[in-house]
Length: 325
Image (cartoon, rainbow, N blue to C red; front, side, top):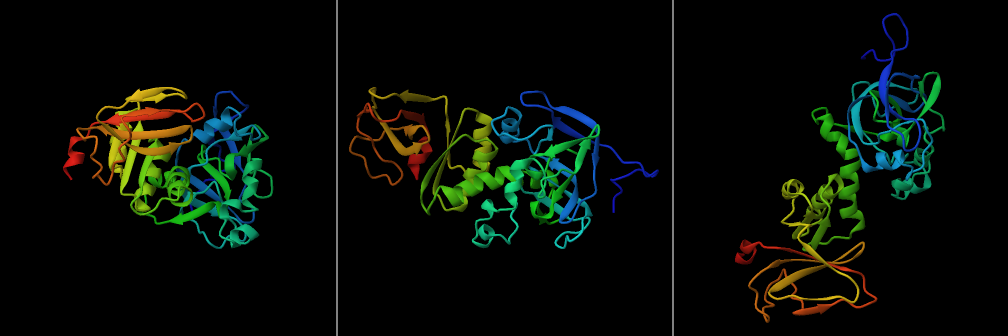
């Protein structure tokens, strides 16, 4: 087992971690962090990689209220280097992905297949571990852990139920993203959006979560997945994740309530977004009466947005080869 808890002289070995000392303050990288041994049902993890998620920023600016000082980070993967009493599912040397939504598999919700509502996992919102306490100190004072993890440190003590064992040949820097970005994006597509075989899906925003929504939409059987973003680099990556078409978001017109627009030679897909209707389509030579296209729904030549309707976003691209199928 790697020696990570103490030096050869028996003195505690200090580790580094990024610590948020108060809301709206810069992170402090401290090298005086001490870890207590893992307690019952807990393991010590040597971090192999950690992602940086917008939720970390939300804790930093107070949008997600958590006690400070706190070690941020909730998207990580690493290696088990020590196990506490009663840990049966993990052993030293195992590679794991860390989950910010642990489930105990024993409570009422877990037994109903609703592990995201796990009664024990709810302690993640308290800034400590399952018993409400923390295993980390700095300058003699306790530090809290985001989501019972704190992946912005070289090592962490975490609950066994926060660990998902993976094969040793999975790169940890890839596995870390499964802990949040992949979990959130693919989960949104498969479990929330109710995507069916043959559906057309528009994904607005192709960051870490959006790319995985695209991936999830293809897994769910969507025949058309349209990626929308402001940056060409993200749109190129979206194609690698399964997008069939891309739209650069800067190429759009916004119609506010009461406004109208003439739409010569345009056909559009119709979608509903969080802020209103989103119409995605492409410039084409489609005739007024051309409705023999299984992918496109022609809109009237002249569209008006009623006063009580949300804004409409028209995003237009030109893909001539699309009509050659």
